[in-house]
Length: 40
Image (cartoon, rainbow, N blue to C red; front, side, top):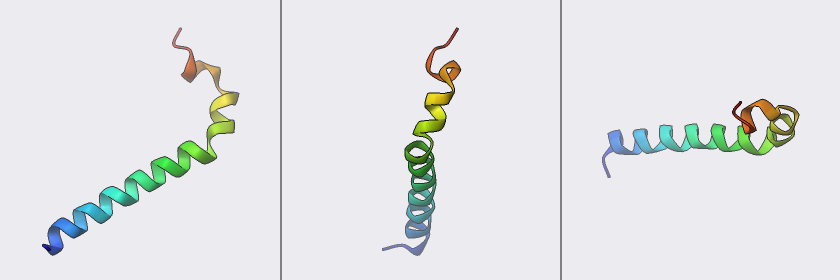
């Protein structure tokens, strides 16, 4: 496998992981903010 491709994949996975964790851990935060859920 190309090391460059592996690096990009790792970066992509890391970004998705941070976003995923933010979503999971921020569920309560999202519930606190109904503005984001309801576009007014």
